[in-house]
Length: 328
Length: 309
Image (tube, rainbow over all chains, first blue to last red; front, side, top):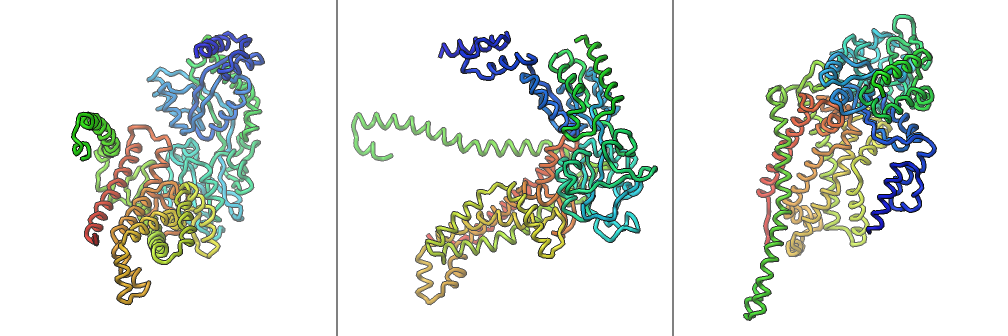
């Protein structure tokens, strides 16, 4: 027993020292041993990074975290998805290092952060085209105008048949699905379409789980729902995206139209907010550095719309400025 | 306990004393076990009702119970819980319509008609059914029963109360069947023999002797089934929808009280906010509903109990 403890101690010390020679003896403590051997190939950072926030951005951060594990196996990144608003709430209480957001931080959230003395940097990590989807059997709604969407979704709207949306549409029950009120997607959509953030009819199938929206719209001929572009890409065999007319003609959501902003008004930036103080921890700095350096690959592999070169350059310089300021 | 005293002597008395200490320890441990359930219940009541009372300081009980629009998370918020109560009661009613007759029929069959071989097949099948996780039942309702209903020409929404209720009824079948069967099994054989001696047929024995004699156990199984239906979460969350709907049309999507609690609890409403307290207000309402129902059922059982011993 005592020998085992001693070996364990040696192994732990070896892990900290990072010379990894005592690996063989340290049979009992495999994690420590693995860390030492693998660190030879790359970084030697360790620690835990806490991220929370938007369920739209969550998969992006998770993909980045998984890839980052290959470089820095000692760093653990936990990614929560409690919604943009919920994420900022925790972020401004100082509980998280990174906050995923599918909209820019709101004034009251800025105030909350200031009150707690939390300073942060905003990085745009991807673009998104908020996508309005209908059933594949829907052959009438190729394109909807912002006005029509507002007719459907506005507070107190009683529209429940497609023929109330447009005279040319058939007599087909309109079944609505969408994100719940915690969602940044909900905030963004209601702001752009209904003209006021949070203003929406409430008698629709609301769920924070985008898969429930997919189930609803695929199961209902007259179904209509909305969510982030990546969910549409994942489910494009079972759903159809509607073109949106924001005043300049019908535009389909796509990587190109989201990047150049022609998909109006539903293309939007996705953000990660990083706490400045956290940059003093090398693992956080390394992770954000990794996020920005590999933005295009991460975005493409997890089906997001990557940043344009211009946006990427801005993110890089913002990051460098923040690191310099903290003096890490 | 009396044996040591019968054989008077030094050694037995010693043993008896030692035994008494052990007895106290056992008694204490057992009392502690019993206390856990009481303490937990008290804890739940406090945890549930304290935030619920805070909720009712801001929202009047009348607005809550009589309001017909439930949208606590939207702007402007509205706190009428009726649509959720109706959703819960509707799905419970459908489930009961399935589980009670079928369960009772199955119990009568197993108790009065089935050969030991048939019982040997049916009993384990029911036990298997009872062991299926409710989330599986939920997806079964959504991906199998709903399309089936549509194929049968019933125009149901993709999320609807009907298929959730039907599947929940199947889920409750084993509860009703096995408890009712136990009650029927406990009916003294003499009663049956007496009835047969008077020239009764098998159906008459089953329906006029055994079922009335076992009625308290049968009602108890019904009540347990209803309580489980009211509290069931996964099936309604997955298959019934999350759309408060004050309608008795089972073809439409609706939201049950438990589904609201689960969905909102898993979301990120800020702790301490009025939205957060709605979870507890709905939970407390659910708790009171089952409590009233259980008290009512106990009365009913006492009233109709037929004691033969």
